[in-house]
Length: 107
Image 1 (spheres, rainbow, N blue to C red):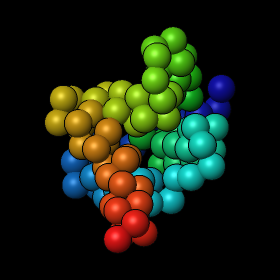
Image 2: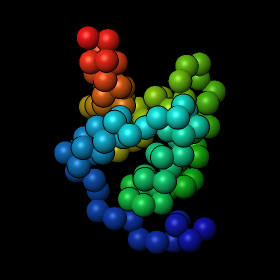
Image 3: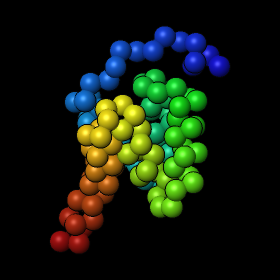
Image 4: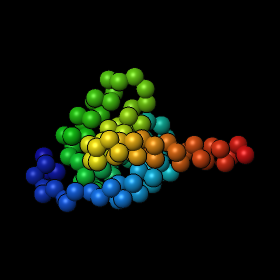
């Protein structure tokens, strides 16, 4: 695959990743299929933070687990990029914006 032969960019800083996960939390809608498609486009195709192969491995792993695949995938990729703190941050920032919007709408 062409994406596998391209040189990897420099490691992503934690701050840049935090901003990405927050942005993703605000724009990801349309259910898990849409959220996973946005993650793939941004993380693999556009930003090249992880390879296609690594993304598909992570997606397959998350699909075997019970629960929301998109949430698990965000957490897993956050963990791949920055360890435990990256996984916690990615998982939290993936859901907190929608939670804040729901609280705001119900208020």
